[in-house]
Length: 229
Image 1 (tube, rainbow, N blue to C red):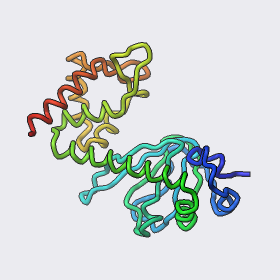
Image 2: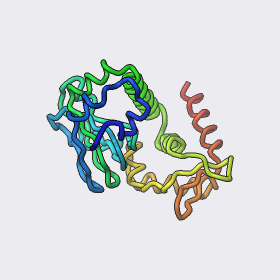
Image 3: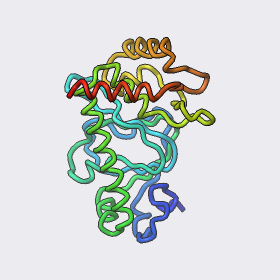
Image 4: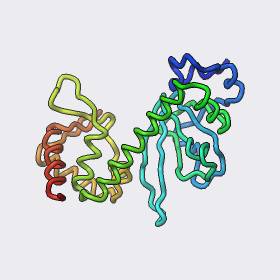
């Protein structure tokens, strides 16, 4: 039987009566590249990621799409419509094959009030998203294209095994994806990455984009912030 105890988000939650909510949820498998929810959908379900990855896009009034986030097991989306009942403001599509647990809005709201552990976990994830969005908004206001790219690369990169001074993005991001993340054209990203490679700041390997000198990027961002002051 499919149960919330198998959903990564609810792992180690000990104060929730799962039987009460299991029968109210639906489980569904999605193919790679399949749309889960779209702009202006009138649905209000909340989606918990059991397996796979999804991408959230927002669309500007001019019709330009910007990547808002990419999510993995243990995260959820769709909560805004569940809370305020307003039509969907984002598109969510799968990046890989995925399994999602779909919880109706009334059940989601009941979970918040019934389980302090789940509520605390939900609040922490939501505040983390707000902080990240605030940081990205500030970057768009303060930084030029080059520095926005520096910041996004640092945000995406993780430690590189065996190389304490370097960081890596695995797999290497597509240029059009980076452009959608920082709000510019693919050609601009390609040009800036070529310049960084020429400076010896990055290196593309078979399975990763390596930031060879991440401290240089961090220093340049700090300098840009001081210049703005």
